[in-house]
Length: 73
Image (cartoon, rainbow, N blue to C red):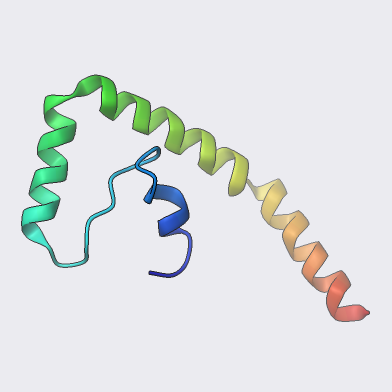
């Protein structure tokens, strides 16, 4: 896998990661969340915190500025 998905979910702290096109795995993950409201809520809280921290407009703007500054060197 590439991109942000493994960083977001590989540790199962922010979500449950299932293989693409694996209906059985998706069903199992949904049942886990349906049957454990506390876990679903903690994943939601952790996911939101990560998104606000890592993907805020301010953070993305800073990363673009850093990229532009590096390109100008």
